[in-house]
Length: 324
Length: 247
Ligand SMILES: Nc1ncnc2c1ncn2[C@@H]1O[C@H](COP(=O)(O)OP(=O)(O)O)[C@@H](O)[C@H]1O
Ligand SMILES: [Mg+2]
Image (cartoon, rainbow over all chains, first blue to last red; front, side):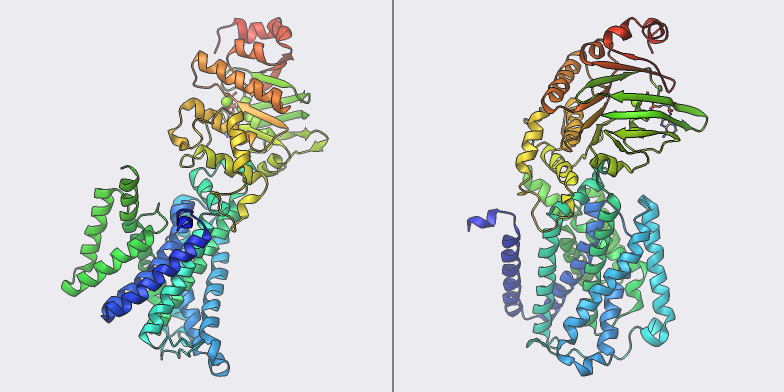
C-alpha cells in the first residue's frame, strides 16, 4: 500500500471508492432510513459547501449568492424531467438532466461571474447576493413554468437507467454518494493542480500576479464557473431527492447554509466543508427533534466554533495533529 | 536594452515623472538615486505598465512597449522586485517560486498535473539556490526573516528569466552588514545571468561601489547621470543632494 502515501489522482480515486464501499456496507449494517437520509444529505450539502469553498477558502472571495446555482441546477433538472423528452427517450433522461443542470448552472455562473469578479471584497459579495435575489424573483415571477412560490408542482418521473432505479432508496443512496465522491475526487485534482495554486496565489496577494505575467481575472472566472457548476450538480441531486424544486433554494438564507458549514468544518482543509455539512445535518436532526429553537442552537454552536476554536473543526483537528 | 523616451506622469498637481529619458546598455548594472518622493518608484511603475503614462515612449530592445499591460510587459522580459515586499504569505518559498515559473510559461491553467510533483521542481531549486534561499526552501513566506522576504521577492522576478531586472530598494530596512550581503548577491546574480539591472538604492557607498551608471532623480526629473566618478564630481549633485543635508 505504498502508493497510499502519495497524494495523487489514483490514490484519491482508490480512497474515494473505498469510502463509497464502506458507506454501502454501512447501509446494510445500519438499516435505519433516518441515518441513510442524513448521509445522503451530508454529501449533497457537502458538495454545495465544498463548491463555495473554492471561492472562499482558495480564492479568498466571499460569495453570498451561491444558492443561485444550487437552485438553477435543481430547477433545470426538474423542468427537464417534466418535459416531453422523458417520454421519448426515457432511459437516459436522468443522466442527461443532470448534465444539463451542471451546464445551465455553469453558463449562469459564467454570466454572473463575468460581472462579479470585477469587484473586490464586500462589493463582490453584495453583487453575488443581488444576482441571487434576481434569480429568486425570476423563479417567483415565472409561475407558469416554475410554479412560483409553490415550487415545481406535480413531481417528475425518475426513469431507471443502466439498471439504476432512483425510486429505490438503496439505489438513490449509492448513486448520490457515488456522484458526490467522484466530484470531490475531481475537485481535489483541480485544487491540487497548478490551477489550484494559481487560486491560492491570487488569494494571498492579488497585486503581485500581474508582475509575474499572470492575469487574475480569467483564473477567477474559471473558478467561479467550476464552483457554480458543482453547486448546480448538488442542486440537481437535492431535486432528485425531494422530487421537486423550491424557490427557497434560491433565497439568501440558502446561501448562508454552506457558509455555516464552511465555518463549522473549516475553510483551510479540503474536506472541511464536508465535515461542516455533517455537523450541520446532525445538529439539524437532533435539535429539530427536540426543540423548536433550531436557529438559536445553530447560532450558539457557530459562536462556540468561531470564538472557541477560532476556526472550523477539521482545520482545528489538522493543526492539532500536525503540531504534535 | 531599455530605453525611456521623454516619460512624464503627474498625479493631480504633482509632476512625479518629468520628461525622463534614459537608455540602459545590455548587461549593464545601473542605479537610480534620489530623495524620498523623487519619483523613483513611479518610474518603475511606468516602465512595468503598472500605471499608465501621460507622455513618452518605452522600448525594450527595438520593441515599443508603451501602453502595453503589466502582464504583457512582463512576458517581454521586464521583471521587478518591490520596495515593500510583495510576496505570497501562505505559500512556501518553494511553492512561490514554482508559481512564478509556471506563470511565466502559462502553466497555471493546467488542471491535469499535480502541483506538488510537477517537473518544474528542479528549476525552482535552481532559482532558490541562485537567490540564496536554499535553507528556507520549505519555509512559509510569512515566517521568513525580512531579508529573506526581500530575497524571495527578487527570486520571483528571477524565475521569469528577465532581460531587464528592476529592483526597488532591495536593501530597504536592512542593517549595514545585511545590505552589503544583499548587494553582493545581486552583483553575483547580475554577473551570472547577464541581465540588465536597474536598482534603487539610498546608500551612496553601495551605489558608487556597485553601479556602472547612475541616474540622479529629483522632483521627477533626472538632474545628472554618469559613472560613479562623474556623479561624485557633479556640481549639481553635490549641491542638491550629496552636500546639502541628506534627506
Ligand atoms: N499612485 C499615486 N497616486 C498619487 N500620487 C502618487 C502615486 N504614486 C506616487 N505618488 C506621488 O508621486 C511622488 C513620487 O513618489 P514615488 O515615486 O513613490 O517616490 P520615491 O520612490 O522616489 O520615494 C510622491 O509625491 C508621491 O506622493
Ligand atoms: Mg520608492
